[in-house]
Amino acid sequence: LLDFINVLSGDYLDEEKTFVSTLMYALKRSGAFLLELDEREIGCLYIPTSNGYRSGWGIVMYDNSPGGSGHVRELLEMPHKWFQQAGQMLYVNSEHHEQCHKACLLCLLAYDTQVAVARGELNRRMTHAALQCLLSGIQPSNIFETYSKAKLNSDQNGFDLEAQAKALHLNRSQKKRR
Image 1 (spheres, rainbow, N blue to C red):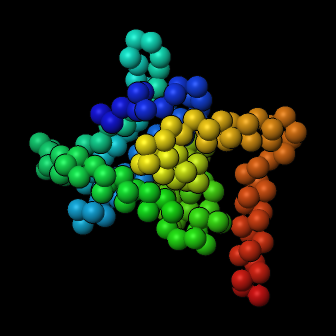
Image 2: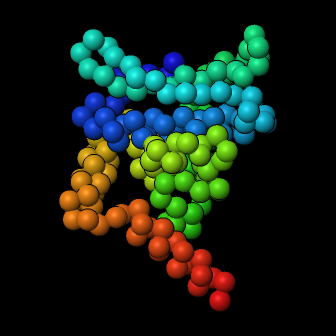
Image 3: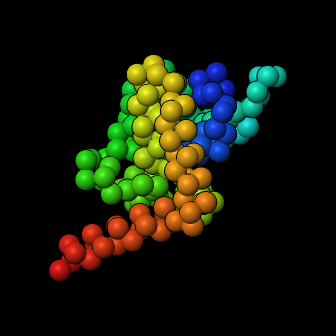
C-alpha cells in the first residue's frame, strides 16, 4: 500500500482522490516501462485510508500473475526512479504539457483508464504539478486549492472548464490539418 495520508493534507479530498487515481495509472505505466513489461502484468487500485484522525487515499499495486512475479517488489526497491518516470509519463513533452489537461493517448488514456476518465477521476496536469512538489519535498496543498477554486468558480458561473479545454484542443487540431 502506497499510503498518502501523511503526505497530503486531507483538506481537499476530491482533488487528492483525483491525484491518487491519476498517479496510480502513471505509476502502473511507468513501472511497466521501467521493467520492460506489458502493462497488464501490473495491477492497481486506489482505496480509502484512515489513521484514526483523518481520511485519505492510498494505492495498492500488485503483480497480476498468480503467486506474484516480484515486479512490484522490484519497483519498490527503486522508488525515486519509479516516481520520476511517472512524472515523465505525465509530462511527455512541452507541447503535450500545454495541450493535455486530463488525459490523452500519449500519457494516460488506455483501455483500463476509460472508467476513470468517464468518472472524472483523472487530471494529468494537476497530478504532474503535485508530484513535482512531492518529489521536491514540498506539500502540494496549494495546487489542490487552486484546482478546487477553479472547479468551484466554473460550477458557479456556468462555465464549463473542461468543455473549453476540449474546444481549444479541437481548434488546434483543425488548424493543424489545414
